[in-house]
Length: 534
Image (cartoon, helix red, strand yellow):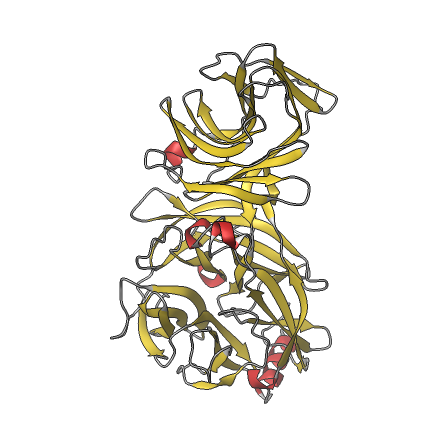
């Protein structure tokens, strides 16, 4: 304890500020996973001697013939001399409407006739299912929703489908997509919104749907090599936010920093969701360790709200999760919501669905409720909570704001400290201590005035700008997630995690699929440790 106190005192006397640091890029990562690594619910290689007993083989109209299924030598053959159509419903499913099913197709029947297709999706029973289909016979791909026996083809596209290939169904919120990998990587072929009579965001509906696959042909045999299913991963990663303790210290364990990140989906903001990742501080490898989904206080629907900050408040034996309600964004206002969970719940691993309520953030005379507030960051400085966030005049006109509690009050009892209304496209709030002094970082977007464009403004706790970070600005509004990494010998490395805006298949999916993670390191390494170390 004496060493910890001495280290802190030495820190207070230092003169370094964020303006003294020079950041440069040391790594760039772009994980892409339709099924999130470490979160596969089904990994079927058709090599088990159990046969197909773990599946419900459904008989689908109009053929009313499931065909003959033969599981052997690492393949599943499905065939008949007559027209057949079957779906294999597994025992596995997901707790949130963020799912993928990938089928590795060895060969189609190729026997002539109108039908020769493979299916992947979520299935309740013979009369209720949501599937992507890939037809070799007709050279087409599409998405079908069957509700109470009524078939609706949501979208279809003529395109060659040849084996061997991999085909995939992915659901992100209320958006479903069909993807094809002919051997050089997955690309989306079609996507659509779910119909009004099938809302898989509602747990009472989703719980009956299971990961499934199937085949349909006029005759002959379709051969599958494998099936994988589970929670949807990401097309890109953005909005990195280091998990912190209440005093602002980064949560670092086993040489890894824990971060929440927005995992881009297959479309606009409402298709993304929040995940927890580790960043190896030695080689900058990323690994997903948790998914966070949210139910708001006024609905049972499960959303992928994101742009989160996760805080471990050990003094009050709780986790605080603050998030932005992008999960159902349709152009209306965004709010900051929060949840508190006992620290005995391990939010850094596994899958969690958290119930949230609105965080009552203060507004100023320019804030428009129809546009809203987002990007929360929380820290307790001495005995007051500070919360940084974004206020919006309108959706594409927003600026940083800072709120504070009274001494001893909780983070839900806030008054406005200040807002920088000179900005019109600034977000990505980070509150960080350096040299014993607290600073606020943000990021100016492309629509900012020329003299401040592509900058990371640095503020004091009165939200007076004192300068800008010396760091690359790789895209429109990259978050300046700067944090200290304590080193041996009483020194500190400073890292910044941000993102670059290259999209995935924007011509098909539109805006929202972006996110290459960019890791930067600063020079010089500074003396002392910013927070007490164990």
